[in-house]
Figure 1: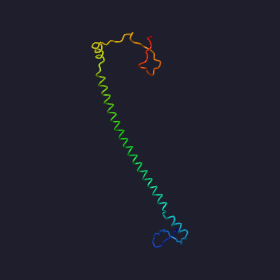
Figure 2 (figure 1 turned 180 degrees about the horizontal axis):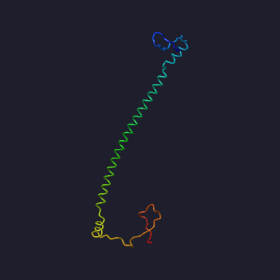
Figure 3 (figure 1 turned 45 degrees about the horizontal axis):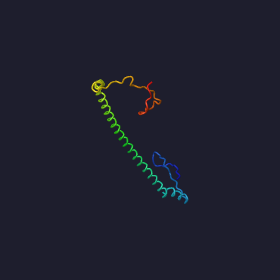
Figure 4 (figure 1 turned 90 degrees about the horizontal axis):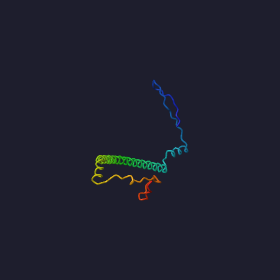
Length: 144
């Protein structure tokens, strides 16, 4: 559409209004415009598929976000449970360690049970060929 501007008289303040010139449209131009404005079935199908894909992606994302939140809550609960178990374990270990009196154990072992320290000829020192592990039932090398 072609627009031209012209003055309109009839007021003290003149305004500029567009004046529309119309030309008859050719059949080819009319067909092209109708085709451009027409919605094709394949376009509708394409946009429908795209909308479904976007909706599916949104649902998948929200589901994954919900699972992440749930797993995070589960991890926090388990960490709190672990901390309470560790605290209880430490308290029990401290209670057991404080109840052990090494002097009382020594007195009972030596006086009541008749135990004695090993003498020097009963202790055998040897060098192990492999410092990584000890064969518990292996042969003990002779005294040095």
